[in-house]
Image (cartoon, rainbow, N blue to C red):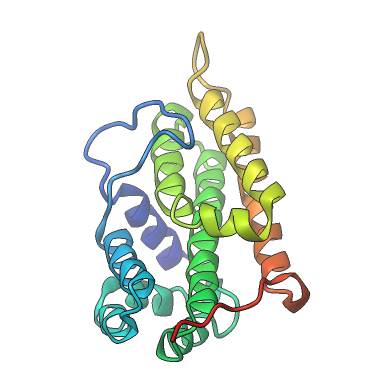
Length: 211
């Protein structure tokens, strides 16, 4: 991972983190929005309302597209262009898949960056909760779409996240950096496998077009 990408991921992990992350459980906790997630929700709600022209304008002018373009090298080839084309074509299903892949890839890269930080000696008690918070902030936006396409991956990710969170807050003593790294590694592997399976044409769901 290049230094600029590592810095960018650290910034994303810090966005919205004004206080140490509190313990939570997947399915109960809803992370606070930042500019990227708020823009995504604007686009999503416009698509759901059938207002594709509004959705496309919000996407073109917002930070979500800027982030997708900036991270193009870490995403499936052509993902941003295909996602925008889907919005322009009023293809809600393909647009949903594009955004899902973006947030899954972002969560994967945050898990990998957390592992790298811990490998370099960063304190697990300080680093791990912040990165877990960021991972859930972004993955949470994709989980419903993931569950529709690969229910096993959705369940596996939730279990892996809960396990990793438990490892960062042991009942006694400090977290074990080796075990915490393994937790982040499991998250990264699940999400990497999901990206591969979801970008394989035979595993994708039919596109839903809205008129």
